Length: 79
Image: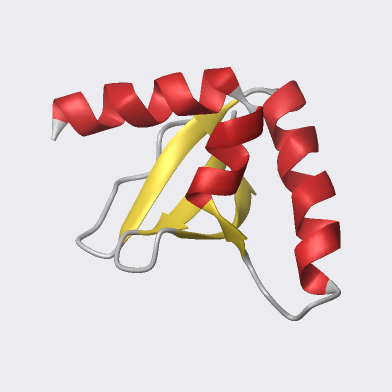
């Protein structure tokens, strides 16, 4: 399973990880399960932002991936 790693304080995506089970969220880090299409969109955004020395903002990915946006909303409801 693929997960996007989000820094809760800054709402920046710190990276992506693959794990057999859902990693445990911490007070600072949030893990959102994503599929291959969303992961590909993230990597496309990352290649653009890295040229500027930046990280991808959660909102940027949510704007182009409805599945990711739905996952964010669902995660927010659980908390």
